[in-house]
Image (tube, rainbow, N blue to C red; front, side):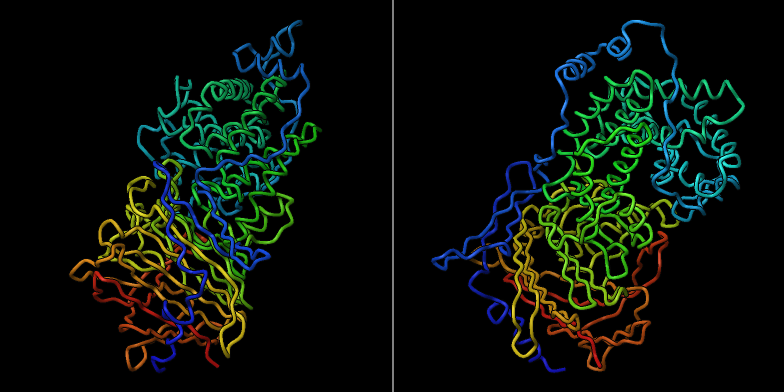
Length: 629
């Protein structure tokens, strides 16, 4: 294919128009970047263009959830409970003391994983494909478990799996044995969170919520002593959360804690003051945990699913007590679902972003159905930072924002300007993904590597990350400013197309270069054109050269073969379709890579790499991905 194919991909040619070149916006001190979005620009009557500047989603709180209405008496009760007056005095000031018990049985709204439940009955915890004997699990936390196993064990998420695999009379004895072992290892709560993995606010809130939703599994046995101990622990855990929920490790963990407090207020005697207290706290906390388009501040699809599941379970607690949930619960769900769907490919499975693996469509559809939200994917989750283009049977996803702020990051990835591209549900270009499931079949030692820029389909300089990757999901300095423009356009002789242009400053401080990426997707989905530009930040470019690499990780069913001239590659998909990749600058190489699939298993794949040296004065590299035949 002749190089002239790319003549319309240069920054000064057909890809540049009058609305391009919006200046980068300085970030507020201590915050990540503002995101400038010009696709929402509107024309005034005089013909001038007005650009909309979007404030950073990671610094905003949702302010338009409907307030939960309370009467003056309820307001006083809530105030008294917040000030430390026991709930029994506020709800039942006269009469004998009532022991801990549950007032209703909750219908489980989310089915667990049957295979994991069968493994539990066989004596193993099964998490992301890795088995751990229950007898070898350290419930006390002296010997740290892998992070995924730690979350599963201490949040009691495994109760849903057990519930899904067998009738209650067969599953309950297994649940009670594990419950007894956990109670023996965790006698008394610590004075404050963080003293042991079991007593983070996130794990404790999830645990209490699961105990209440799956109470029949842990309270149906003949051992009256265990039943009494379990009920007392439920009551004590609720009181511990009352005191410590504000000390959560992050905002999303705080919302889980508040949800558990509300559930305890609904399902335990004399819980009205706790419920009122928890509802106010939940509304405030979730407003601070998500951006104004509904994306959680960690920017992780896994965390987004966790938030939806939490609210679905909480709503089931309201229904169990024949109480209408506050309108705010449905409003929250209606905010959370569309951004999640924005990261779905044509087959309904999720893209691999911010630690997520390729979560299968069945898991996503079950969650969305349980939410009772009927909506379409959000095309532009501007504050969450993801762009989605649907072109024919093709889906393009792009990360057009800085990584999450350090205090919100759970599995922060240096993925700015990376993209994924699928055709008819088959993934053609992917990111490696899977950092959040490291500790299952995916080894823990790969966690940091899976979060690196090189594990994503984007450009890197000098083998460095665009944002520093730290241990335990943390991130450091790097991208602080992102500029993004999206518009519909006509490509001469080829019809309509969607054009996204975005840039980041992650390499500006070290190398004096800004990375700008332009993607143009034809409306019929048969072609994706791209150009990666390195633009010097100062008037005078720095001397010398620096190594660059542009990576395109290929999907699991893609077979790649280099062209004879070394300037491209043929890509054969499992359905018999054939795509051609061409590079306008530099030779193309095929290297090994891996991709974490929907079962959280590492799958060997290939990657196309364009690499070489570029002047500190800048450069541009064009490429084309086109369906043949």
